[in-house]
Image 1 (cartoon, one colour):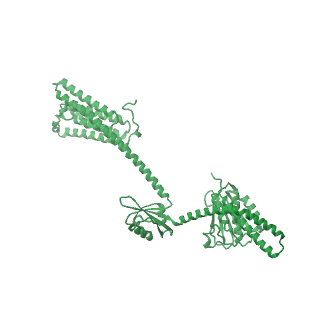
Image 2 (cartoon, helix red, strand yellow):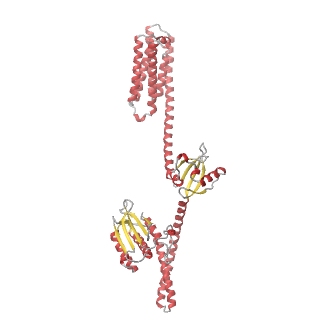
Image 3 (cartoon, one colour):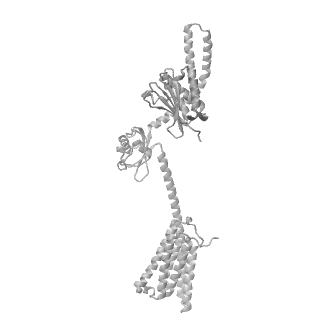
Amino acid sequence: MPTPFETVPYEQLSVTHWKSLRYFNIYRLSIAALLYVSLVFRPSSFAIFGLDSGSFRSTLIIFYVLATATSLVCLHYYHRRFNLQLTVNVLIDVLVLTLLTHSSGGLRSGLGALLLVTLAGAGLVGQGRLVLFYAAIATISLLAEQLVVALATDFEVADFFLAGVFSASFFGVAISASLLARRVIANEQLALKRGVDLRNQTLVNQRVIEEMQDGVLVLSRDGWVKQHNPRAEQLLGLGDPGERKLANYSTELAQGFSAWCQHAGDEPVLVRAPASGMQLRARFVYTDSSERDVLIFLEDMGRLLDQARQIKLAALGRLTANIAHEIRNPLSAIKHAGELLHEDVSDPTSERLLRIVLDNTQRVERIVSDVLELGRRDRAHCELIDLRQTLPILVEEYTGKEAIAADVVQLEFSGPATLYFDRSHFHQIVWNLLGNALRYSRSMTGSVRLSAQRGSREGWSELHVIDDGRGVDENCREQIFEPFFTTHSRGTGLGLYIARELCDANGGRLELLRREAGADFCISGRAVEWH
């Protein structure tokens, strides 16, 4: 079992414990200083206590001043052994005040009341059973003083009765103060815990608001922006905090806010932000704050449209994949029947019509194959591809199959010239880009260039497929990667779309870069294996 004077770990004591002990020592020093000042400058003031300026009392008061000052200095530099420091302070008070009481004629002098204040202070500062120990020490000291007086002088029952009252008061005051201190400490710990929880919740809320894709504004009723998240700053271009009135950044939004204040509703407002040029959807929400602030949620309509487009394309992809499976079997039957029929046809007209059927059958079959390949985009088995070895073989295979001169496509290598990619996906991407480049190029020596080089991002490589054609029209740049968009009469509109989807599936990117002449499609991906 731990002793009362056992060291209490510093981390188990709150700051309030040490602060309370410091205030207690300041009180003790103040009492000692007042006694000393009264003794030196106004000896007559001790008449109310029955004191004079005798050497014993002077020595006792000087000792009390020095002891209280030493306790305060020790507490300032030594935050250890809390219970021991408090116990020494209380014992010194009990000893000094008991001796002063004895030399002043007993409890009738009134100095016993100072012991009550000391025990009350010790009860507020102390811990556990030590408070009862202090009351017991004070009681024993006071009764011992009365016993000495009774043995030395005439015995008076009233003095012992008064000592008993004081002793009972010692325990009552000490216990009451201890219970009060325990309640205060419990409330303090609860307040600290709630303060920490509130701070943590505030940090979480702040982080969530900062990372939101939507802009958030806190607006006063007169249209001043009080708070905002970084996304709102990007959308509206919020500037000087001293001029953050909503009308300074978006007149349409300010008008919408004014209309909402007059006729509150749940319908969002579509506005355009002058700073970013984006079309925004603003939604106004009441708050329960004392100042009746209003929350405004700003959503980028472009992002919402992109999300809707992605959902639409995903549904379209699933639908076309299912249709492609159903089309493939009858398509194969039509092709096979057409080829058999072609062997027996001798009429030129019938042969021309049959050739149209077979050509379009082959085109539909190519579309079906592209759609089915797109459905397998998520099954990527990445490996490190050495472009110096892979590209020459791939180009030779393509030019041989399409009967293109070997010098039309040129290869250039610099940097690591490696890509971490699914090999079959990479083969199809380059095959589609090569076909697209050759279709629009001049088909001369070096008309198409495949340039492998170090990427702009650390640890990435790039493969550029460049042609010397007319390039991509500015009006088509935004649609070039959309499915079924094509400017060629015999194109399917799926080649570039599939190429980009396969790049995304491998953690890479496919972009159309700007050039003064021709087109530059850039495949970028990691140059090393993923970890």
